[in-house]
Image 1 (tube, rainbow, N blue to C red):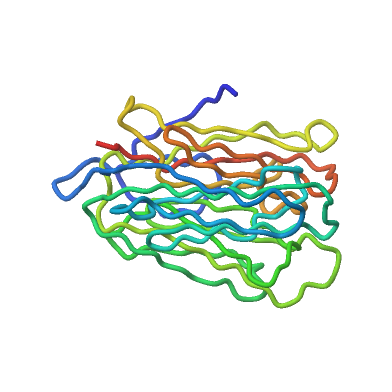
Image 2 (spheres, rainbow, N blue to C red):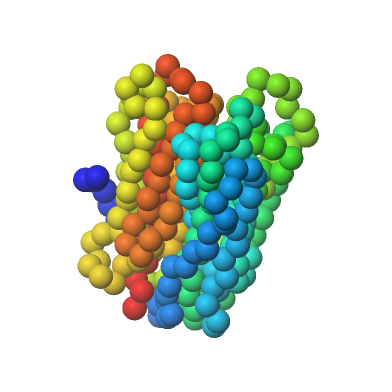
Length: 292
């Protein structure tokens, strides 16, 4: 799908929470480091009907810089309930929605791996009040966001994450309850993968699909590429948002089918769990930097 990415040179670090296209950049400095041994790896669960997970481990000598997950099977029938990074692994888990499905499906988990010179760490925070409040996880001052992850705990396929929006040193997230049944006690936990120094050429690219209702297009797909630096620039982390025609969020009953990091781009798809007459679009984010 042709896309039109946009890039803006930013000279002041901005932590403004906005869901318009956001592109930030951090030029190389004396303390910046490249990303040796860069590699994107994945693993896949068995092909069955029923809730399941998958784990992937970075190659020896590398650690996790970014994450992704993908449901391979029926669209809109499975919630990606968690994509959780550790220093060396990523775990993803899929849960069928309340209606369930008899179809066979798999979940694939992705890890962006590398061995940057700068130290990295994983920071997490949990949203109170059943995960319905917006949540921000911030790296320490002077640190930079490389990737992210999340976990819906106790939702049982009846809640979905409707945005994971990366900024220069923070990630913003939100989840919403999609079931007509009463909400039990559940939480949204967000993870930020932080680096003490910025990789050279750190950019965040974004793009969005057109707005349309379910009667026109019940699912939407979009790729966002790293750009402007030729073969040197690669994907580190991902992000997305599902929003209505005026850019408001959340919009319920839409779940993420996949958010996949490849070497050059981030691929995403969102689909309606039940038909929704409102206009909505999909925003996708790619965190990119120079590989060498």
